[in-house]
Amino acid sequence: MADSIDVLATLKLVYGIYAFIAISLISWFGYRVTKPKDDDAGAKPALFWTYVVVLAVVGTGLHFLTYNSVPWVPIDLNRASIKADTVFDITYEDHQMSFSSFPMQVGCGEHVVFNATSNDLTYGFGIFRADHTMVAQMQVVPQSRNDLMWKFGKNGTYYIRSTEYSGPRGAKMVAQNAIVVTGCDQDDVRAVEIGEQ
Image (tube, rainbow, N blue to C red):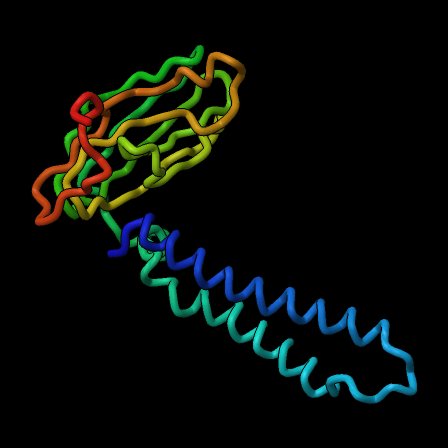
């Protein structure tokens, strides 16, 4: 399974190319609109339609080619048939997070469900590495089902932060060293215990 950082790097490149194609199409169109009608030296309509087809193929093809490599897609698509190995309950109230287990110990490759409940405001549940890159996140809405299934593929220690604005106190909703993943062949070098850096 690909890591979210690898997916982001690939998407930056692909969407950069896609944006370049789209901007060049708009530039070509602007150039053609400003030329005099009797000047036929510009590009032909076939080029325009070639651009449109390339944009459509690249835009849709990108999603078909990457749907299995994006870490959360296979889990979301098959969620009904996947049984969770572990469920952790997190309760949000008055700008505080309380956990059914802390730190949450996770084995490599286990399907883990983070079941979050808010008793007052809308909060966020975000899993982060020590270098502050995000692993996964979800919104935690009061009186709603808020659960995130995830599978970790590397050893590491992750922290949890509220990712939704819930007032000034929400910025301090951080639980350091909240998730500890062990048993993998590889270490997530970006996810070390806070204080070890």
